[in-house]
Length: 344
Image (tube, rainbow, N blue to C red; front, side):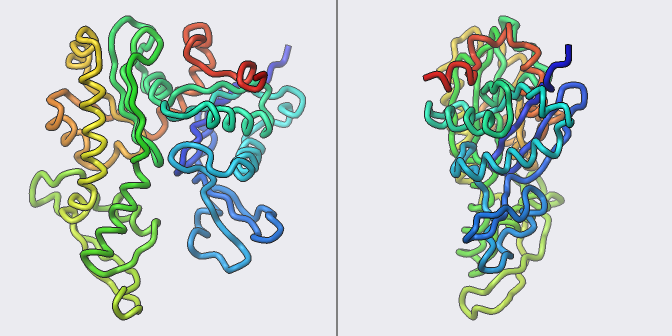
């Protein structure tokens, strides 16, 4: 008997990753959709739409329908997902709809959960399941979550950072804050504006973060320099300035301090037996934000606990959502499903 494909989706603020069982990650695109302002006709989605951000003529608008890890615009998210799924599903999916598992931040509300489930079902899923992102990240990174030992995961995405202590197939303690990669970009924009009187866009800030960004500068060799182009706030004309890694590190200090504070709070509210396991096994960092240079070092110095960045940090949540569909018996008490949510 033919069955629908099992699909895992990391529905992120910055990007969408789709994992199909047996095929691995089949799509990795920015969470952006471009449409005609008046008619709402979709012009582009994903990478093509991302290139339009901040560069569209008046009648076309490119937007991110996800904000802080949750749906900000339900209609646009559903249309974006439909187009992404159309790109990767086999022709047979018209007759055998897929089962879909989606990763969501651990702090989402009931209304936000329902919006995600409904969007996935509207986009063509037979059944939709929701799994908290740190749990999916742990599965995707290869942690044996069903064991009676404690593991700590800090998943830093585009819109949210999720911190969780995991044991026996579930989350024991968790914290979710809406500070992550996008907030890092905003911090760089504010710093450049205040220090250099230069206005730069989100894409430029992201490029600075990737090229020369660091959580801390360990030695002089790490202090790189990059040219930044933008608009002079005084003259209104184009201007180029140089910015260093030390400056980026200073710009990121405030959002990083907030993440570190939440990590410490989570550790403080963790049962002692599990803290002992975490000291032995270390904190696992996942998500695109975890790739910020020396972030593991800063977190280790701040908490006194070993920190490891997952080898597949960018893909861990997507891979974990796909694998979670093979572990429904282990995870049945922790998942949210469309069977329950849409019946209410």
